[in-house]
Length: 203
Image (cartoon, rainbow, N blue to C red; front, top):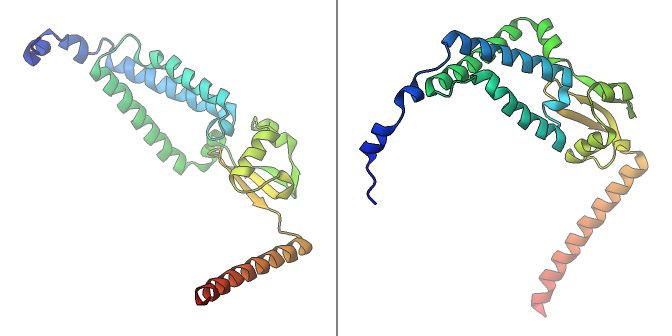
């Protein structure tokens, strides 16, 4: 069976593919409304939705994007309509970022401020509740930063972008001496191994 590219091009619905079925104004308005809804929804949902996702949050975001897709494109499946929607989304986001940079108070209200989750080694339960975080999720985030347990955390905070930042407690004097002793033993072990490697070839 021969493939005829020209015949394929002639059979395409060029009008349906290129010409939008919705007006440009409606397409822009739909995109702006959905963008505004998502900004407010994610702000109310807490910073965790931005970075600290569990499997359920991930599923919600996937379904959310698919659900709102029709709200943006409507009944328009044209290429030009998609370009208009995508371009509007990028321009609105760029304009929003520039506007917020000139209005820090509004940015703080929309984006939020960093919030302390652990202070002087004590977990702030109210902050966890406000950010929709559990102790288990806090522990997992600490593990990712090399801290074995929350008991070793001096302070922790969640940034406006949802990232968690931990400061570990300084080691106690006895623990510090123990670590120094271990380090010296390791150094001596390496020196003994090196000496044995030098002596063995002479035998």
